[in-house]
Structures are given as C-alpha cells and as structure tokens.
Figure 1 (tube, rainbow, N blue to C red):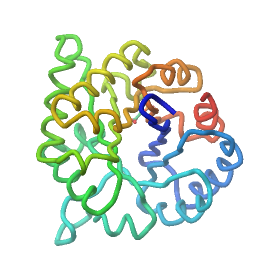
Figure 2: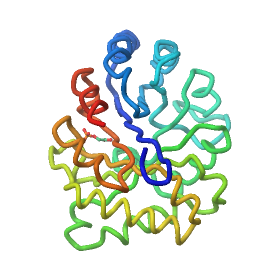
Figure 3: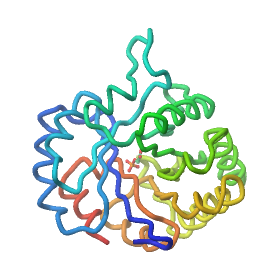
Length: 253
Ligand code: PGA
C-alpha cells in the first residue's frame, strides 16, 4: 500500500501480441508465479483474447482489460468496439490515450476525453496515459504538455466520476527505447500530476488516483521506480510478454 491507502497496480500492456491460445497459456503460468504478491495485476490484452483471458484468470489476482474503446454506445463505426462488448467479454479496465494510439492513430485529447466519459459511464476503469516527447522535454515543456493533456482529457468530469482513475505517466521517449526515466523523473512528474489533480479536480481525487510509470520498465529497474512515494504502479510493455520477466517485476514489491 502507498500513502493514502493506494494499492500498487502493475499493468501489462500486451499491445498487438498473443493469440487466444498464447494468452491462456501465459495466464495459467502467471497465476502460480504471482500468487503471493500484494500488488494488483492488470493485463491489457487484444480484443479477441479478452473472454478467454478473463475465464483463465477467474479466481486469481489478475484483472483483464482492453487497450482501446470507441466513445459511442453503439453504431455504424466499422472496425470499432463498444464498452458493453468489452464488459460482456470480461474486461474490467481500459487503457486510453496510449502514445501509440495518439501518434499512429491520430487520437486527440478531445477524443480521449470522450472515450473516458464512455468508459466511466459503463463501469470500465480507465487508465489514462499521458507523457511528453523527447523534443518537448528538451524544450523544457514537460509540465506544460502534461497540464494540457490532463486538462483536455479530464475536461468536464466531477470528482466522484474519477474515483477509480489510474493515470499512467509514460514519457514517449522512454517507451520501447530502453531509455527508462530515472526514479527522480518518475517521482517528480507523478507528484506534479498529483498536484495538478488536487488543484484542478480536488483533494480526494488527487489522493485516490493511482499514478503509474511506464516506459522501458524491466525486472532490474522496477523496484527503484516503485520505491518512489508517488509512483503507485507500473505500466509495462515489452517486459510483460514473458511470464518470467513480468512475474519478476510483480514480485519486486
Ligand atoms: P515498454 O512499453 O515497456 O515496452 O517501453 C510501455 C508501454 O507502451 O506502455
């Protein structure tokens, strides 16, 4: 537990990896490897594997979620997926605004804000991703960029709606590059985000929001990142694809 009774949540983001068969096999191996942890384990899995993954994880400490959702309840949106479909399949959370979605699929803060609204309304816990690019960091714009992302992605929400918020600070320059943020950067930016929440949404949300760090997390750097008082968890990409590496990360706490 962190300050303010916040649990530690370690999320694995599988991205576009793992078939149904591979997902089920992974979860069967992961369950005994992480049974003693006090952390909550979340897995963001591909749409096709959600149902089987949720069935395989039943009764364990592993929570299954999705990596994206459309903002409409339903409709003529070829190729998209609705919250009710994800919830029916067994998803309990959704990753929103990942930098790959922003960069490769042109998601804007405004679109992410609408997805957040839908997810919250339909009881899908949102993990909102924010983070600056290398260029923005070099130009000392990190806090300004984060403030804009937070302001626009969280526009219009009342504090009660955000009580289950997970916020993932994922500097774009650290994702998939092996260039992990230092624990100091992870702590400073997490604290900045928490202060922003306190000033702009309210004290309660600032205290309850779980702030994760993501970007080249591995078994060697997980502990020092999690030791930071305002880092409540980790969002792991590459290192969550093997049971060995992911369970090592989970078991550092
Ligand atoms: P990475 O990805 O751990 O491979 O850097 C993190 C993420 O994209 O969430």
